[in-house]
Image (cartoon, rainbow, N blue to C red):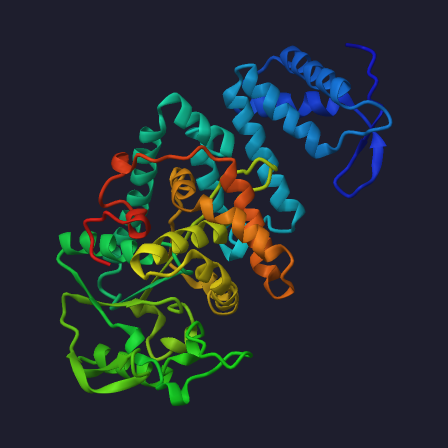
Amino acid sequence: MDYCSIKNIVKRNGQVVKFDKDKIVNAIFNSAREVGGSDRRLAEILADKVVHHLEITKKPPALPSVEEVQDIIEKELIEDGHAKTAKAFILYRYEHSKIRMGNDKEYSTSGNIPYKKIWQNLNWALDRDCWSVERINNHIKNGTYPQLVLEATEKYDSDVASAAKKIIDRKDKVRIVIIAGPSSSGKTTTTIKLGEHLEKSGYKLVAMNLDNYFFDLSHHPRDEFGDYDFEIPTALDLELINSHLADLLAGKTIQMPRYSFKTGKREAETDPLKLEDNQLLLLDSLHGLYEPMTKSVPAENKFKLYIETLCQIKSTDGNFIRWADVRLLRRMVRDSWHRSYNPRQTLEHWHYVRRAEIQHIIPFISTVDHIVDGSLAYELPVYRKHLFAHFPDFVKNYREDPKRQDAYIRAKRVHDFLESFIEWTDETCIPNNALIREYIGGSIYKY
């Protein structure tokens, strides 16, 4: 193809520059080389197909954008049977998008999650062809969805097992295991499974329930609306927590308080706790990484585990689905049956949750010893079954409400990507010890 009607292209910064087909050829050929390819002529043929597609879809004065061209390259590679080259190209795009945002350091990326961890998750999704709404829907259409459930379950279990091994390797020093993460990331299930692994090596996790360390409501901080704010770490008696932690590591017995959410006060009764030689103290808290909470404990005596839903799925608009949106859906499902909350209440409260996460969790992620990916490649079609019927009303009701624009924006975004998934209704293929059971029910574990 010598003549090309496409003369110009729009760069990501809006600048219009001369269109160069050789750049498409080079992008395809370089991706092919990454997986052992050596046929530049084939890259040229594929580039011609990309240009032909552009000429059909972009009539002057309309101009193609760089992103549109790259989308078409992905499409042509996949449809032409070059899956390995397509994977290399997708990874190339992802890596360079991070570099453009200035987040190309190995240990600094979205939400302070190490770039290496993100890369591993994306690579896993590409290998199993579940990196987009379309590809996950294809698993449902082709009957391979149950296999995807199995492989995602194995991936998560392996991640938890790796964390347990790190703790055992440091058994001479570690006395406290901190499991932290944002709301509905999977902390409870992860804690249970980590405990199972440690018990096999002769160790037992003993929980110190930090909910019992809340201040009485008369001393409790309030938010800007005058409501009690339980989402911030200073709602807890940090001085007492640190005193008790120091005593436990010194071999002393402490008297843990009991807090009643019904009365908003600590009860007169306390519970004794002493840490034995084969026991590791468990701190399962939203704010476990908040340094003032455990400042009395030397760093070498702490093992910090962080869990997040590191979802690597592209929606139909080409953007990756937000991790927090996945967690929102989890909490909406769980709250609706476990706590008798209307999903609307969960959605309206979510901005409080997110504010606390951004202020008191994310800044400390770089201090952790291990990060567990709590996302499950198969979970969104399940949540479509449980929740999608609510979202059209959410979008409609919040659209014109000036006080609920945060809820509207979030509801509209979730509505749009959830609508694009094929609903999955048969949950029998999901193991009864799977992380998702923490939210949809039917688990062998007690929550």
